[in-house]
Length: 554
Image (tube, rainbow, N blue to C red; front, side, top):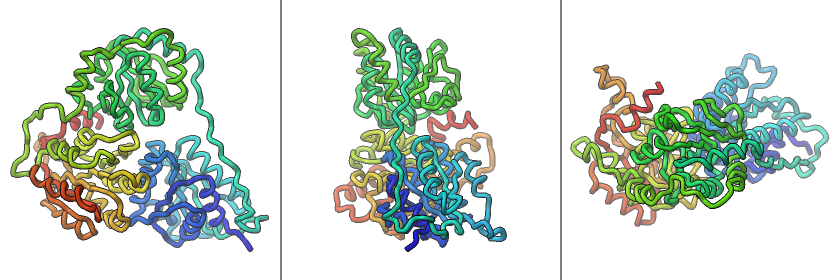
């Protein structure tokens, strides 16, 4: 009996701990995908490779367990590239199994330089070079993904896949080396002392937690208690401090007026696993002129990459927070945690608490997106995962829909592509089947991704797809419209998106006014036998509150 390289690769990744695989099957990835399945890795077939790529990305983000994407050579990989780019830019630990043309197939129509393609977008290109090196090559790719938090594309030439692994009788004889998680790197003692001294002298400290802090919520909350810091997050870490009375929510373009006021008045701002980008800091406007800025990160290259910092600390966020908490001598400091601040956070800390300015826009065009989002927050179950596509609408679900924790929010905006929000919902739903997924999309992204509505219905996923339909590419309409530009290329006739949803197997409701949400209430109260699509015709907001800030970076 012989073992092929394709069988070995799938078996090794299954034993190493890949949690789920997604893909579109072609001749080039058929055998390796079946090997994954035989090794116990669940596989979900999507209708497009882009959907599979982002679903794998979302699964990895939501669970912390690496997922795999399986694609055909050449066109299968190119179809998936936007999703792979998003994952790479977001440092998602993920494996891409990409079939590749064999060494002799120089004239194949499928032949492209796959290594160069994936390297160009920030992913790591790996390759199974030969049957003799297949085990080492596969383990190396897996380790790069999980230890370096990288999206790794493991290219699998067809001739190598078909080769026989030498000196291996059966898969039962395969010895897969254990990949032991690396211990979190602790910061240097001098850095701990320096950060402790900064926090000990702070009167109004604010912590901003980013992607790198998603596993460090308890440690950051404990340190914030010691030094009297208020807590905020970047958009991708939304939900990390849900329920904490000192939490300000998202920092940056989605920040409430109160959050912006309190963060900009801080005398110390500490970014924990947070890049302090122009989005998170509103082009620096949220950092006071005299504020001390500290950044804590695992990667030396990240420190000070987006703005100058007064102190950079190299180390794991949870380990650093724990060490600094020990270094802070004496009793807890009040810092920014005054009775007045706590009362204001309770009264003004959520967007739904902020008076509508301008007033309710609901009218002939449709429902005010702020009103819609507030009502959805009330109607939909609290145990939810929210995924958000890109567009003018995106701040409404991000700011108005509460989530139970950091695993309840999946924000695929590293590449700022529209069309990924539905795909992310699929991965999140499979990662957390105990929660209802709310996939918030614009009409442009929804129609771009519509093929995966069939995947949602086929799998019977617990999902509500909310389409904020402004009948155009709203970001461009509001950016270029005031200058008198011709908008014919970015506005469209009204589309019956609810009918499209029904055609794919959804229940569907069209919403133009608050009373139309009764259909959503009925679905929530009912058996939920099919997923729900909410076709929300929204009134023009003249450009969302965060849009002007966002376009300053273009």
